Length: 411
Image (tube, rainbow, N blue to C red; front, top):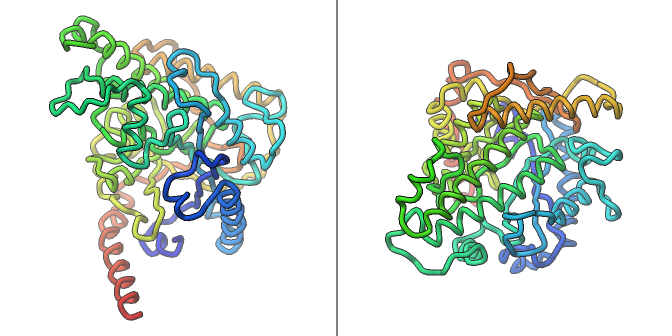
């Protein structure tokens, strides 16, 4: 895959594998059919780490070795709409990253800092959530509809659904749950890259996450049945979206702009337009992603990625990439870590106030570009500098695909 990425013109292309799921009930149907189990998934992950480190030794630290996270809760319920205290998925994640099957220390303990979880085992984390509770929401429509029923959908297929339909309300509840699980992930492991921020609306990209403007209650009341519930849920999801974006920006995370959404039927890449605008308006960092699981998916839909970035003023200026930090800096002391976290908390408060229209103070210092696991965020050049890459990418993809097809045809 790295050779193909280089042939396509990428100068930086890092490796990532999904964290293995630890329970049989968490496996996807296709994995069960293939005879996989949690032990085999764990073995695959260890084999990936070994092979990725071998490649890294061969090609140098221009290649990073990462892992994409999970946060799968134990129960199928709506508890997070009130008080979400289920951190079982976070415990599982940290145990795998720390290669520890004993006691897990969560964020805020004196034993470890969130940004150092898995240090030495992986170079960086891609923060992805793929479940609500324990139900996968990215597998297929029937499985997603099972989640909708758990979150209150009456199962009635309305040919002309309104904004306040039972199905839309259930989807908003799912979004709220998803965002809380994402928030726990951000708090406890501080992933350097935020994966598919709005995967919760994969099957209906029209679901609003960040409202373009805060709706008044009387406007919501004009929407008919369930209007009050709709108003409350839309405001709840909007607040949690802004909270998560502010938190991620506060420690310097990169939000992936991913062509995978277009590959799966969306009109735009992840994140959706209103979320992308929010991230850029708050000074967040972006990075390019294709979420490739095969050779054919490398650089897929990148013309759509370019158009998405073109559509938001300032987006190109927010683009970064992740690379190894060459500065051999000693680990932060406990006191230095506390001081850095205090600065981050102040930054988060300012960002959230700004996100909800209550800007206060005189701003804040930019978050560090250096991450505790050993990488750093580097600002990328814009499309004018990399014009040839964007012009030739699809041509190169076509040539490589044709060559691969000819090779297969020739046996």
